[in-house]
Length: 84
Ligand code: SF4
Image 1 (cartoon, rainbow, N blue to C red):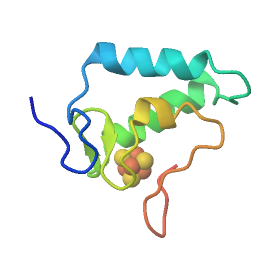
Image 2 (image 1 turned 90 degrees about the horizontal axis):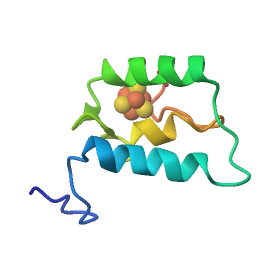
Image 3 (image 1 turned 45 degrees about the vertical axis):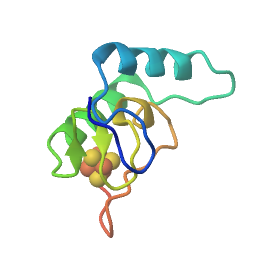
């Protein structure tokens, strides 16, 4: 399987990998989450973005967007004009 040269994580995450990460973040105490509507809108924007890779990852920040988009204070790192 392909590996990310920079961090040695798998480049393409499986649905199970992503669900596990999402579940772990949801179970953390003190994490403020975006509401469902905002989360879905953020993911919709990412999925249409040219920086969205492997169905999960932002090429600019390296974050798994199914996780980053959950965070109420999460921000899009797109230069000059963040997309969300
Ligand atoms: S640049 Fe913004 S919209 Fe594009 S994938 Fe990254 S976080 Fe999502």
